[in-house]
Amino acid sequence: MKRIIDKNKFGPWAIVTGASSGLGKEFARQLAADGLNIVLVARRVSLLEELGNELAKEFKIQYRTVEADLSEESAIKKISDATDDLEVGILLSNAGTGNVRKFFSTEVSEHKYILQLNAISHLYLTHYFGKKMADRKRGGILLTGAMGATDGVPYMANEAGTKGYIQSLGKSLHTELREYGLHITVLVTTPTETPVFYKLGFTKKNTPVQPITVEQCVNEALCALSKNKITVLPGLKFRIMNALTPSAISREMSGKMMKKNNGIF
Image 1 (cartoon, rainbow, N blue to C red):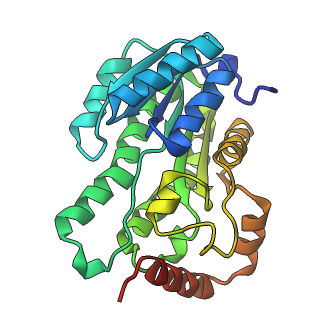
Image 2: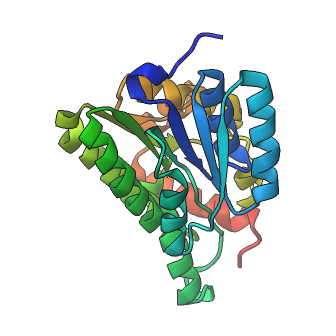
Image 3: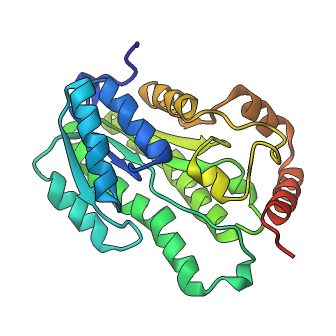
């Protein structure tokens, strides 16, 4: 397999949050295949250890696991303490979640939880590790946004807002931090066959355009980071759809699908 990320260019260690499943797990696998050592971060440490052992045996890399819940502010210190002696060259800030519900049926405390996990944690991680990378004049940061977030997603209003923040933050820093030699890319995540896809009420039968594989999504994202593209929207069919669909129509379609697929009345 042709290598995508050059560890000599970015640095020997990569941090992957949300690494226990889905995109995060595949990011860890593909980065390990490129020879990078991996710091695996998530709440389920047993799954992280299992994955770390697999990657170490298959790709002869080193790994560390950090049990941390990024919905809690204390998680940032756990991660920084666990990696203080490492030269982190890649930050894959991927942790996040979402629920499909009416805005007023969700307590403010739950909205705040989503905000901390989906947005504020990415801000903290980007600031902390980005500053270290800037001091060394090398490194790469990939932030995970979501297709349609900047247009708004009915019944996921807060979640869309958090992902919209991520996309604006990443695009702004892509230009601002260029002088430090940093690569910053926003992954505008398209429908991808992960546990989250099914959690949001989608199936292969009720989805008009079939999701892409996790492997394709991650591969395209890492290629974009390597080339320092400002954003990447994986899957040609979704790029065409995104280009041709006005935001007002996209928002209406999203709302109808979310409502129907999740039994919202």
